[in-house]
Image 1 (cartoon, rainbow, N blue to C red):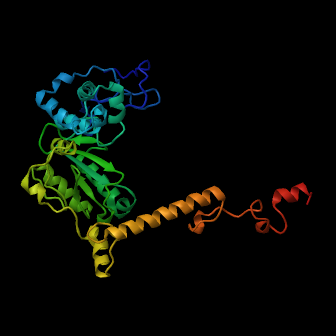
Image 2 (spheres, rainbow, N blue to C red):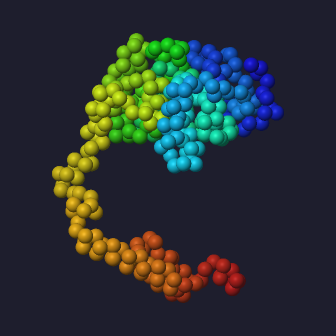
Image 3 (cartoon, one colour):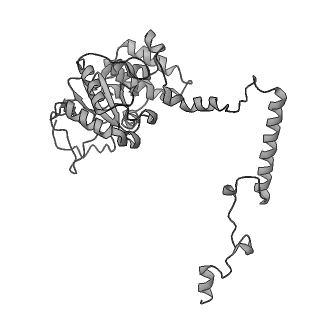
Length: 343
């Protein structure tokens, strides 16, 4: 592929979907050999949305799966199935390829541009072939301060790859794609690392190195929480909405002590959230609450029409000004008033 940018293509905002050339660090980089195409200002060239993708590479089995996904949505709303559809094609090829773009467009009746706009927006849709394992290191504020940045740097040096690059061939067992994540939603276990979106909590540089070494050697250590590890393609299929039928996946722990700490304290103190279920409230109590709520709503509506005060928080009340209340004005007058008087 030429290093000369295709200025005439003009496809803004979409990066190239490559088939993966070797990066200088030994990982997988964008298409076009060792040097991806770049624009004159140094940015990667953009995905050619008219690049011919072949939807026919996906067989009838995948089309049947796509039909199952589409059936989850109301008739005439098949375009709503695009997100899980992208995960489905990713589960087949290990990334969202031009063929995957064409397949989604063909099945859902969308343009390639519409599909590509979504595929390039969300980071879970990979634009290059991904390894057997996607190792994500949280480097957001709390994880970063507690060691996430050091963990990412250590793994990057160990694997010889950078962000979204792959150590080893994506087709081979033990291959690892490394990324840093802005947030993995597990601040109570910081710093955290996920492997194919399964959690490994309270990591250190040493434990993270040990984790990666096990993955590279063919082992699959048990996550701290969540189902046993599977491949990136397999987890992509699960995210597309197809159930993980492994028995051990259904009995795996979903939470840990830090997650449940607040509930435990509340139970010890005898606190409980109010319930409005039929098991704790009679029909009469429900009706009474509904009537009270309706009355409050009517009072607020009337106050909005008359300018009268309501019982809302003082923070929600309009500020008193010299225009609405002369006694609220400054004794010496405002700045504009003094200027008008020549003071």
